[in-house]
Image 1: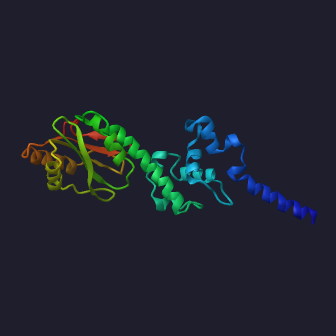
Image 2 (image 1 turned 135 degrees about the vertical axis):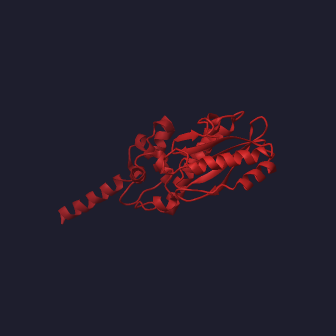
Image 3 (image 1 turned 180 degrees about the vertical axis):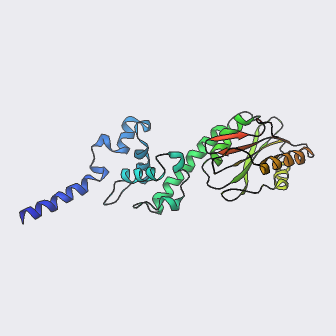
Length: 242
């Protein structure tokens, strides 16, 4: 009887040890962040703070590591995971999945806002800080437009169409109509290749030339067509394909 009681007590202790609140104070992610700053935390610890709590079997940090494993220990790939995909991890419910997904979206928006603060956008390298966060994590093709004034200052950006895994349709009429609506003198268009291949297709080149010619008739200049593939990109203007 005594041995059985000892085993039961030992299991309880082990169960409590898994809880973050029972870790040494300087090892708990929230306390560690307060004492040493956010930069001192690992990716798993930062995600663990978002998750907030674990379960009887796994701590929040354990669940965070499971998320990272699902994404190949790559935060960019993790940003591509949908709420449904995150919920496939045992212990991750809808609330935890939404919280992590929202944090990833905030990261993208912060990255994009830094690009929007640029004084002017006249070439591909100026547009990339805005376009890349919008398109790099998507698993389907999306077409977006940057509308600029005569001084190349960004007026606004918008997604005008979404497609499937391999193609999307860009309506030239909508692009030009919105350019007039926003009083844009210049535009830069972009879309992503979820396949990871940056090479423009014949359809991409034909669309670019047709859009450039149509825009010119309305005194609007198409400055570039940029293709995003993960963290890589190609500029049709830079490649002489406009």
